[in-house]
Length: 246
Figure 1 (cartoon, helix red, strand yellow):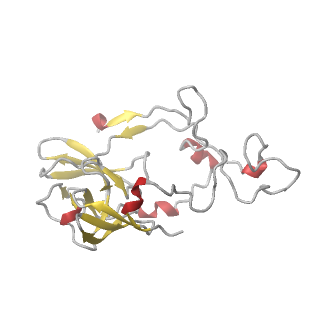
Figure 2 (figure 1 turned 180 degrees about the horizontal axis):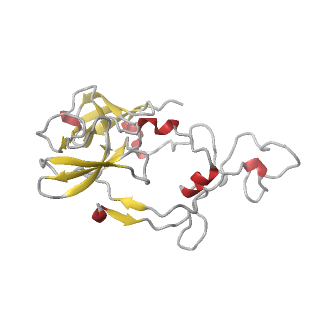
Figure 3 (figure 1 turned 60 degrees about the horizontal axis):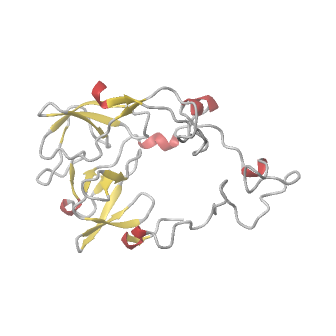
């Protein structure tokens, strides 16, 4: 669908001044960005899946949906979604794979993906291949979700989520085999800090195999690289019931 695609501009990890702001990016084959509908805000309009496609910009597959009013949109394709299936979003619809509903209407135990954190903003959680969250409990206008990391988090009940587990489950088992394939994906090599010089990395320098030379590892910018690095006073701490597995 040409109207839903735009050519991706290559930045190669550089900022506006041309300096490297994100390491290990560069090259990359020419790509089209697919305009995926994460908001699923076309309420109470039935759409039919007309194609299932590969998206180079994400690990999950996508589905092209044509709605009854003629509009076409890309959505994330969950497991079990097939050609000619009907999907919709809203409050008075069936709870089935591919449909999007408010969390308050989903029974405990429902598997969901593409979950909103702020109502109307669009899905932000559980959007990569094979991922899903489970509705664990409901209380006081909040819904508890068990996320893929094992974390149990509270989300407001009016936020929308899509039923089902995302497809392309075996993506995590894929072997890339060649360095060239990674370069065509836009991924440049990573060099160990201890193999660099002192100006390039805190672990660098020394004679021979001298180790990192400090008590705890650091990132290339000097920040702690192991342990709990989450900010103690982060605004979302109050929504986390149980922290993710270490």
